[in-house]
Each structure stands twice: as C-alpha cells, then as structure tokens.
Length: 87
Image (cartoon, rainbow, N blue to C red; front, side, top):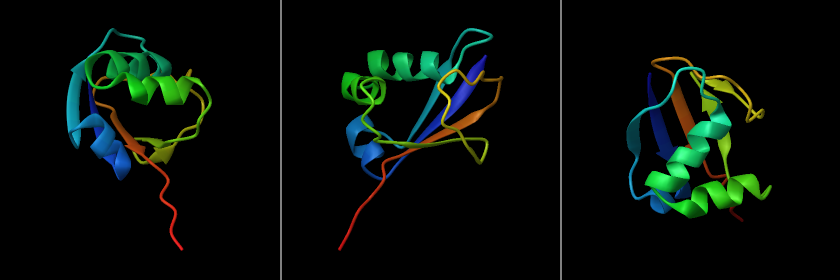
C-alpha cells in the first residue's frame, strides 16, 4: 500500500524534503512507518520519536494521532510537524 508523508516545520529540514510517498506492507502501523522513514530518510527522525522526545505533532488524514500502533491504510496522508516555540 502507498502512504504520503508530509514533513512540516523543522521536520522538513531534518528529512531534507517536504513530501515523501512510500510503499509499505498492508497492515503497517504508524510505528512501522516511522522506522521506515528513519531508515530511508534520516535516522534522527526515528531515534527521537522512539526515545520519547516529542519532536512531532502527528496527523493522519487531518486527525491528530498519538498512538504509534495506529494502523495505516492505503492512501493515508501522514503529516509530521515539529512543535515550534517562539518568544
């Protein structure tokens, strides 16, 4: 199945791209997708995610998702955003 991954904020700097289309296995979860992104794009993304560093606000098809075990479906749009702080 194919999913679309969108990187916004500093996430696009870390990934080196704003958009990525990936073919992943049927029944894959958000956790599986993050592992694949770490392998194919930048390991820093997955390392920080899995070490509990909250570097992303994650949306699947416009709905905020916190559970990495959320199952993905063909055509899903996953958006990863780094929280930005200012002052």
